[in-house]
Image 1: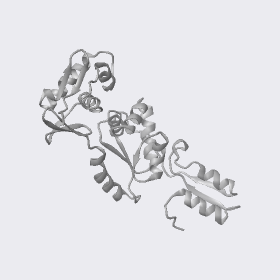
Image 2: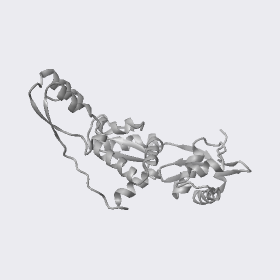
Image 3: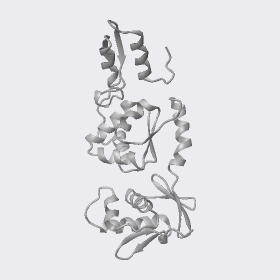
Image 4: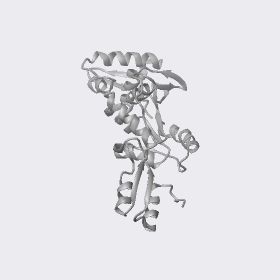
Length: 257
């Protein structure tokens, strides 16, 4: 039996309709933990239909070294240093979110995935744990790794397209950098966070307090904002791109149309 949608729900419907009473059915589970299983009702519905169900868990996650590559990935998502992150299985989603929780970064990671870091999934089963958390996801029509790679190549430039003209320059905002007239300008995490906050409503004044709240590890000293703005202006190459509004804050000097 080959389900048209390649979904577990369609397989379940087929089995129940054929009758599974008294049958012993082994089911490969989606994830390493029940908490993040994208289809937790599958086993219960088979049991309710009279089947003896044998769950088989094939995914296993082992502890990762503190500060290793995986932790750096999670931190990078939390700090919004990526344009997107790809997921190829629901267990990978679960592992990322559980590690973020262990690192005290769960809220930041979820917020990043809801806003500036796009979650690109291989298919709807992989995406389901994220969808439950209100994270928008994107996936190719065909649930294949090659299709996902092509999907990212095609969709990410559209999703990340944020361009404006300020102080006579074409400014394009990406994940960890800004392009000014086509030239890549690398920014520190604080400068990048400042740029994103200013670009939410281009040309509108953003207060120092709001900019402070946008900075990674935001504290209470607004001098951190002045430092971030100074470094942002230096990195952009033209200090006029970011304008100071006396006693109010800062704004992008967006050119009038």
